[in-house]
Image 1 (cartoon, rainbow, N blue to C red):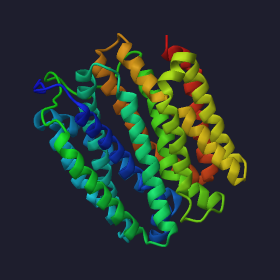
Image 2: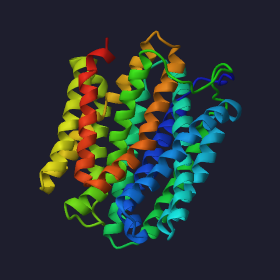
Image 3: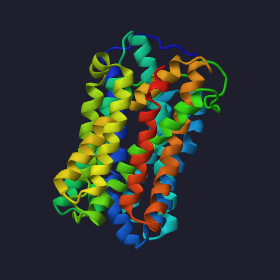
Image 4: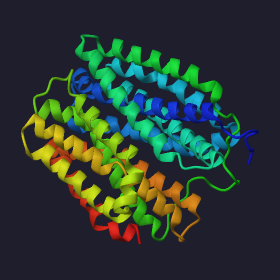
Length: 379
């Protein structure tokens, strides 16, 4: 492993936070565009689900390649490659064919997957060299970026800008962040060893991976279907529907930034059990009560309840003894991202044969599996 030549200072820590912020911002900028894509292409919920499958596929398939690239090129180079691929974002507002949209979503998804892996590898190195826990704070900045991204695009659309104009302004802002941040990233941040980065899970890790699949699917359902649910089921204008994901992101950010303190008071078991139950009840409220204020409360409950569940899963994967910790965390992450890959398509298919409310209700039911398994996870 190529070691950094010096201990990280404030600049390296801030640069890592900004990359997490940038990643969340770019991903959330897509959420308010979903209703416009469906309207422009004149497609069904099932077809939209297949398109969203392309987004998840791009992310999932780029992750193993990113692990290899970070070990050879370093995180700084890989982050720059991923940021250049994010320039595909404006094309999502221009494509008028389903095939063209699928291709651009694959590229955009690959960019999101690459930057996700590379920034987490960089964060691990910074955290270890700093000698103190910082990962929760880094992910808190990702959530803050999600809030800003959803609010920025929704606000620009509300002011009368076209989707293309709104996203172009977002891209300019992202470019400024990259230019400001890049000089302070470490070039030499490599994986230890020559073994595989992603491996199939075994033993107890399989359960953790399945539960992470559920958690990532729940978060992905809010990103990909939240705005469309508000427009089709609650009559919200497409220009304002992105506020649902913004509210969800605010609640999740608040939960993550206070998560360490909450866990120290309640313990991991109670946070996992009550958090998953709280999130499931939020989904039930969102889908069964036809009231915008209740819908807002539902988004808050989903976000806050789910905010600290994945970190607890990763901690459990690192502490188990069925597999080496590094391989276990990589396996759980891979299964989690499979939730992003398959989740949107499954929701779309269920919505096609029933309704979007029923589809999101099924997500609420799967969340209860996390509640039931809480004691096993923190054994």
